[in-house]
Length: 177
Image (cartoon, rainbow, N blue to C red; front, top):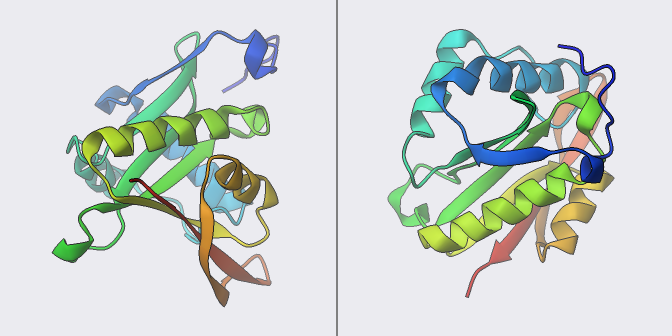
């Protein structure tokens, strides 16, 4: 998908964030699979299949696990979600956020807007805490989380291996009153 001729400054663009629907799933998966192939933002090593994407999407049809997309001129440029932090029932009030943005729209403020939307939504849904697992080398994402009130809750040292690198994962957490 080409966005040639479209100014990339987020404040100059007329973009909107809305809840995702099934018609969005292919583009959501494309953006995620780009991250799998090109970044350490996810520790998946293989692209998400259509079957796995559908399974993941089905979970996010539950209003308690929202999935949002950002779009410009009806073209999806990123997505954000809240997923279960852990499958055991005592963790129900804790969610894990994920944010993925098409490469040509990264570093323009959309990640911050997505995370603010997820925080507002989490509070409305009655979450006690929202967590993120961010690769230790991902300074921009760690900075955005800090600006929105997330604190480092821990660090898994040398837990993942991707692209020949051994990577840390930082756990960031925001507790809602």
